[in-house]
Length: 421
Image 1 (cartoon, rainbow, N blue to C red):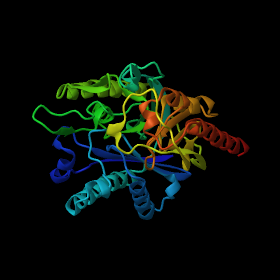
Image 2: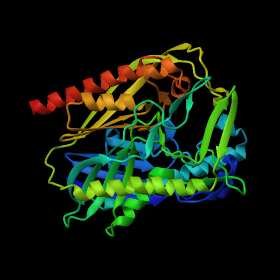
Image 3: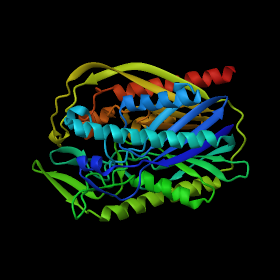
Image 4: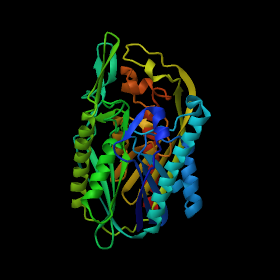
C-alpha cells in the first residue's frame, strides 16, 4: 500500500463573508486530502465547510479524475459540516448578480484549496503501513428533547448517542504518522448562530477543526488529521454557545457569545486528545489486500419538506405529505476488514449503529454528507415523535430503515465476493 496526504487553507474574501453576517475569521478553514493506492486508487477529501451541493462535489470529482487518471467511483468529497462557514447559497436566495459573482469566487477558493491538498497528497505518495483503533469520547449528546409543545433540539435527549471514536493510522516507513483518519458522530455546531458581542458571527471549523488542528500539532512529522462525520443527524456537541427552547409557543434563545470559542477549544481538544491516544496505541502493519469499491442505488419514499426552516417548531401534529420516491446512493470503500460506508443524507445515530452491527466486516464506519448532501433521513422513532430531523427531511417514514437493509445487503455481497477470491 502507498498513501499520501495534504492540507491547504481555504482563502476567504471579506465581501462574501458579509452576505451571511460573518464579521471575523476566528480560525481558518482548510481542505485536507488522503490518497490511498492499494490495487486501485482511493481519494478522500475532508473540507471544512457546512455543505457542498451535489454539483460542487461532482465538479471536484471530475477535476481530480481528469488530472490524476483516477476513476470517479474511487473519490469521496466529504465536508466536516461546521456551521460557522459561509454557505454556497442558491442563486434564488442571493438574487443580485454581484452576490452571485462573489459566491462563484468563494466556490473557486474551495476548489483551489481542495485541489492543492489533493496535489500534495499525490506528490507525497509513498509506502505505508496502516492500523485501526477505537475508543470512547464523551463530547456529544442526543439533541432530541421533549418540551411541553413537542420535540425540539436541545441537549441530553433520551435517544442514543454514539461516543465511539474510530481511527485509521497510516505510517511512513520510518514509523512516523503520515495521516490520521478519525471518525465520530457529531455536528460541529458549537458556534451555530452565535453572535459576537460587537455584532456579526465568527468563521470557525468548530469542534472537528479544532480536533484536526490538535492532532496535527502533536506530531512534528507533517501529519494530516482528516475528520469523517458519522451518523450525526441527532448528535450535537454536549455544550453549545446557543441554547434554545419554546415556552407556550414562544422561541427563547440564550447566546453565550465569545464563551463559545472556549467551548469549541475544550470539546475539540478532548476529541483530538482521545484520537491521539488511540492512534498512539495502534500497531500499523503491512496491508496486502486490494481496495474494493461498492455502489448501490435504490428508491425510498419521498415527502414534501418545509423550505422556510423558521416555520418549524415543536408540535404534536405535523402533516407528513408524501411526494413520490427519491433515489439514494450508497458507496463503500473497503480495504481488508475496514469498510467505509458513504451516503449523502444525514442519518440518525440508530441508523449508523444498525449498519455497523449488521456489517460482516470487523471495522465499519458509516460516513454521511459524502459526495454532496440530501438533508436528514430520520428513523421511525423520529417520525413518531415529530422531531426536527423528521420535519426537515425530503424522505418519508421507513426510508432510513430501507437504507440500513440495503447497506447491509451491499456489504454482505462484498464480503461474499472477497471470500470467493
